[in-house]
Length: 494
Image (cartoon, rainbow, N blue to C red):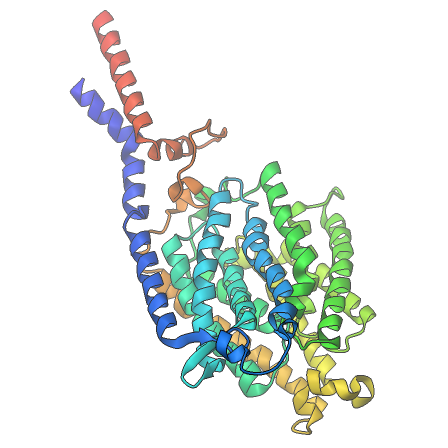
């Protein structure tokens, strides 16, 4: 009986013990979170202070009305962007049938950290005044933009990384994002209000390089979980709808007040609408039986917002924005259907969410459209508004053609920093100290989350049942004892 007990416990719990030892977050996660937050608090206490429109003393030193405060102009857009970051991105990634907690929960974690770290990093490069980082509603929006780039990269490694790896990736990516943003916006004078380059292209290719270095040759062992079910696709569609509704606010959030902000929202509005029709049409065309693919609808319908990000504040015209959105929808669906399998089979890039199709290619398209639109800018079209959209062209520092060249150069710089940075960070995350899930337990919530005991889904692999047992050791003990009793009774009767 004693020997049988040992054998049965080994049989049922071997995988459980091996997995727990590698992925247990009881010490790793608290230590990481507490240390990071304490460092952030110290840095904020030392370097950060309210800006002119937030500080009680500074604001009341001059004569003006309270409604003139920038808060009343920017905060509605900030609310929309904030919802996109925490609800839109989070729920968009819940399509995996057994990774809903990880999608929304880890999205919440890295977003909360990234917005704090981004405030500091962006402040270091273009927010310092007298040795202090001044913050206000606009800095909150910019921090959310940076966070959005990190969440895009998160989509590439979704289900294959530990929370410690994600926080580590965020530390490096936020820093590199701020460097790239400083080079483009401050040094070169690039125009990219909606972030086609700085947010989407950077986040996509950074994430793709990270997931390339973290390539898992045996990921097929978790292939049965790398898929959706009816209700998980429905939850993901909630994220899509939120993103789709608020994307005009995202692109126009930090543009100049007045016609610029108005025009950006309008261009995004029509680009998204045209993209959605293109997505539905292409999804039916590329299906052998003419049925719609929910993956296309959830993702490609948003590509129009990405593609119009750079040129949104320019005089793109309504029909021009619709053309851009239409092209983005077509490119994105074709990417999901044909390019993603090639990237995985030939280049070993395991892109869980297909960020290359939603953010990568549409982001590059948006950068190209922005460069062309900038090169064609004339005073006859922009009038005195040229000073808001292209101040360097308005004051004669550069001509429109050169501005277009700067926009194109900015795309190359963004791709270079993203690719090189992603490769380096990927090797850092490959170190065996982060509690990474094994190839057999990817896309599985119960590795890092308490999951209610329920009847496991039918599967050809016995290991799926062990996943539940590993997180409920009392069940394992009961099963062992029952088996021992049965064997003892059998021996006695025999």
